[in-house]
Length: 279
Image (tube, rainbow, N blue to C red; front, side, top):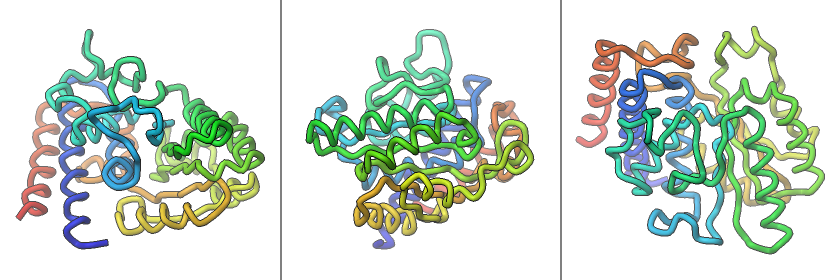
């Protein structure tokens, strides 16, 4: 990928990380760790991959995106705002009464959100239904979803995976945000889903393992996904809390908001990163 394009993606992702911190801090609640880990994936999808139009978010032939790990809504909101689906000023209304931006995505209120999610395992099930619909009616759109590594401990995920493999839903691509931390500890401590690739392959999927913060690897994986006649699972190794020093690989930032002092520190770090990228 051209270096200028990579820098543009990095700038967008960094701005989104700033919005994540601003939103969660303003709300005094939320899930910053898993939002910061998956934001590069979502940035790439909305910047380079998805056939979507911020000016016409409900166009019939658009590609669909489902945030199956719905608690990472701040990441989706941040990218949607960067792409012009709604005004960035709404970010600081996160979780406030009357705001369209609640703790989990709401498809009835938020432009660009294709599925309301939150109960883990249900998002990928909806994505599978969308992909089946596209195949059945010849609509031609593709479906993308992002799951958490803790989320795939849910049995419903594997029911959906089995169905997608049996129906050969080659228009479905799932990312697993593999940051190795969930609310109660590491995924190994709680209920390890490893080996993730072999499990998805057993259900008839093609799997790819990448660095989920490397835009070249994200692009290469999505190009590879188009060459196989199967649903594809991209296992993206990520860092929980990516971009904020004290949040990185720290389980206590799964579902906690920074206080004023820590928010100021996080924003200082991220703005310094942005300044370097824009230099």
